Length: 276
Ligand code: NAP
Image (cartoon, rainbow, N blue to C red):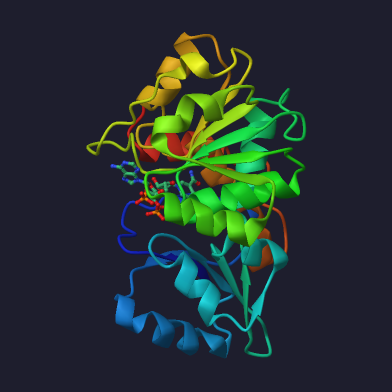
């Protein structure tokens, strides 16, 4: 058994993806969504040390707390300052990991394979948990500079202090200078989410060959991605990241990679209401 915890968690695509992988792999297992109240999170994780559950994915708003509750933390989870994966070891210990950065870079590798992260600076919009994880992943991948653009400057400064000299902080009013010479731009804010505030961004300052990625995947093609594509740029969508972060999670839970026979993207798109 494995699962995902978040609040809200009802719209999570993870149960659909993991249960399809379980069925195709012939594993006698199940993956469920859980939504503990904030003051019950620690008790829930404590109770799972018994070993009945192999592990949990963690989504908003619990990624930072999950990291703090673990007994052992992987280097990439420490760098991200958050855990999207908890594994319950047989001896009762809780191990924290983070596969979001892997998912982000794997999504680029699938949808924009020509991008080499080490070749040019990367612009990341946001300074929340997702932005920090993305910044850590690009630093680890050798990006010469990671430019964080955030409304609340102090949060970006804190990430720069944690991750080192490759991080450069910009305000929203400086976004066009942040875009100069960049090889990729990643939206790691919640702006552009269906029914939420729009992301207003003029892409004119971004090099034509730069790849544009949006972590927001509802809608699949956000206004940012539509504008980037219309201007002839390569795009990477947040759904690909979601699927790619799930792959190492499945392997951590069930000891084998997800079966290649499942079209997880098609399943997710159908669940999101897109026609096949
Ligand atoms: P978070 O910690 O709450 O951070 C939200 C970020 O958005 C902050 O930088 C915040 O700026 C910024 N923001 C929010 N409203 C804004 C506004 N009106 N104007 C300017 N900036 C605004 O959230 P998170 O965990 O980092 O997640 C960010 C997004 O990434 C979410 O949409 C999440 O669903 C998505 N995500 C997707 C994947 C995937 O697999 N595709 C994985 C992880 C996350 P301030 O600091 O100024 O408040």
